[in-house]
Length: 299
Figure 1: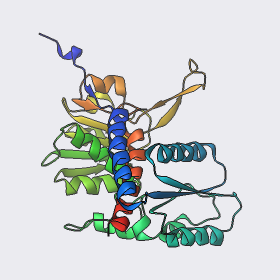
Figure 2 (figure 1 turned 180 degrees about the vertical axis):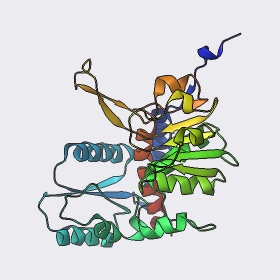
Figure 3 (figure 1 turned 90 degrees about the horizontal axis):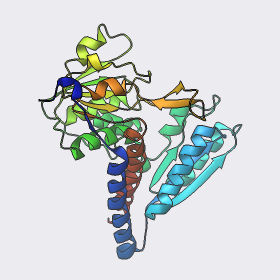
């Protein structure tokens, strides 16, 4: 009989699942184009030239091109006035060919992010961060127009791997507006019993050890140890942290919030970093854009 030390978690392949979702989107885009002569449009507003933002935006543009989604690119200089950014958002709100608007964060210090994001039309809020979308997500029996992409991707990974959520103990590590908070609300909507662990939580490992499902989104490299994980639990690792690695050409490697090697010996399912949640975030953004377009085009 295999000893417990031989246990190997099932690796959740976010890349492969995202690819399947992209194929589904591409065929739906094709159908819209055939039937109505229209395709979804996604506008990306980027301010300044942060390397990480640029590469992320380029990846989105490439994805749009692959799936037949029309891409609108608004590149603004670092020192642009806040009023100018808002006026661009208003133009995109009024453009009937744009079904999704994304403002790449972070914005430069002199621009109020909350103010800019609040100007995006609710019907085009493909990031799912408009206060009204988040508000509906928080209410029983209400459906937001869009769900935030990374949290939606986390749930999709569980569902597509046949991991049941209903009635399970789910622990979310981290309470950010981007992942922790909305993913905890989504898990509640899926009938999980949800606990949120954060920087002021006493004895976090004790709470995490009770979890059937762990969503790690604290942004702390390898914070969750193998000994903190209940045998057979499903672990979705949202963390992307760079740690020094002199053996790599870049001098660093990416790790999650979970100690992957240790966790593999205990968990039932786990997402790798990279290649887990990351590809799903972009796939969900494209899915939200398609859904936004269908609402308008199929009216």
